[in-house]
Length: 302
Image 1 (cartoon, rainbow, N blue to C red):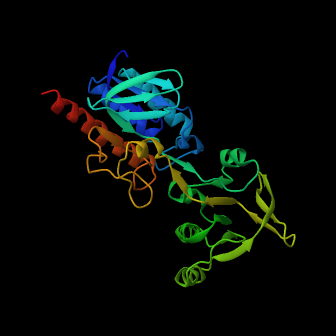
Image 2 (image 1 turned 90 degrees about the vertical axis):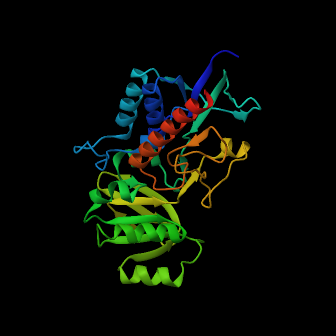
Image 3 (image 1 turned 135 degrees about the vertical axis):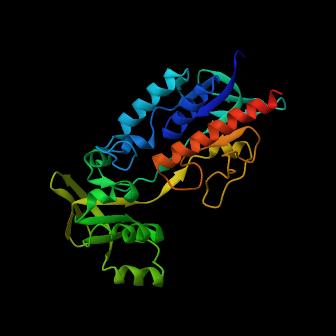
């Protein structure tokens, strides 16, 4: 079977790479299995990362984190963990397409997947900043702009109300067939003077002048400077569920204050865990998880 790692980190986003950095500095043998794409790749330019007042893109952040983790001995491997098991000897075994790895501890940092809006050329729109997914991250940069929030249900309404801080030109676009909003929510939207439109999007034109949604039903054309997608996210909990660990109410992993799941030796950090989906939060949770894993290894070695 080969080497038994002190820790296997599954996921190569901000949480996973931060955990690897800490474990490397704790002089632990640590390997990161990274599928090669992180949700952070969608960050065009973040201005709310402490220490980067001029802003930092998601790809640049990930490159810096990879370099820093490698500097302290962390090994990064491209791949997908297909199965994860926990044996009676206390060891975790992870199987990828080309390798089997064993570790005394595991940190899950598999994150979430964005539920994508029904928009053509989405990747280009996100790259240009015309379509965004995180009002907390970049609402400040949308001040005074014509903003549309595209999504369904109370989550979309909540994001529209949040963005009202930055602009008084807001429209909530609800796809045809979306469940009705609660009366209290409708009242809040009306008080905030947020327009609500039920529609079927026939086509979407994305250009440097804004985002134009062409409505198939009646041919109306609605033009915005930026569209926020509010279809939510799907936590990547499949590996954890095969181990039978506790899942929290919103579908995220339950963890203790030390980021340990309900299984001894299994930790989790980042968007996979219930909390605020922010890079700074993910990195903080990863620091806690890595330190807890290090201390766990110290205890079991006694």
